[in-house]
Each structure stands twice: as structure tokens, then as C-alpha cells.
Length: 128
Image (cartoon, rainbow, N blue to C red; front, side, top):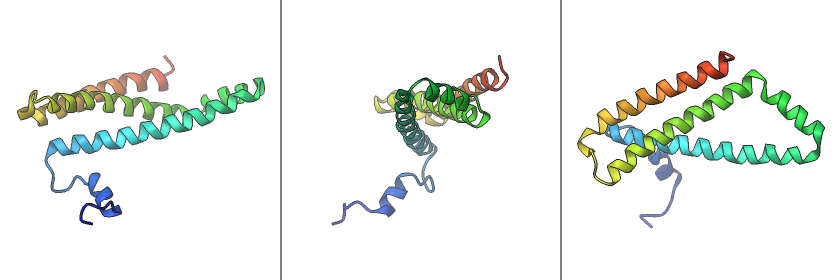
């Protein structure tokens, strides 16, 4: 049973130690993907509550305007940007494009993600 699933093997899937920089990008994509999946499930659960009428909708809108939910939305946007841009990098790597430049591409993904996140944060938190 050498290939049997175990908790240790699952944790290794997310462990960046003793790996190259490109592996950090793969691990980041796994984490953001799981975060987006969790958001999708929670989103569907919350939206199903809206079938309870107008009062449920009004309380939902009030809840979504609270700072904690706006921050949560920003985290979802950040995860989406990071996951999408890093996914393009991983796809290019899978097709053998620019494999030698993994570190540079990861830095470009990080910088572009940072710019996108700052743009959305200024719009969402700045009230513009």
C-alpha cells in the first residue's frame, strides 16, 4: 500500500519546503483554488436563503455592506486574480513555454496580481 492516501501525503501537497520557486506557485494555485471553491459553496448557500422573500433580500444587502464582508469580497477577488494569472503561468509551463523563466514569470504574476488587488481595493474600500 505504498501509494495509499494519507494525511501526511496530503499535507506534503501543500508543503513548500525543499522545493523550487516554481513549486511555490503551484502550491499557491492549490490554496487559492480551494479558497475559491469554499467561496462558491458559501455563495450558493447564502443565495439560497434569498428565496425566503423580500425581507431576506434586504437583510442580505445590509449584511453585504458591512466592512467584514467587503473585506471578504476583496479576498475573493485577490484569490481570483492570483489563481487566474498563476494558472496562465502554469498552463504555459505545461506546454513547455518559457519553462526556463519560472522565477521571472512568478515575479511578474506577483507584481501584476499586486497591481490588480490594489486597484480593486482602492475601488472597494475607498468608496470610488
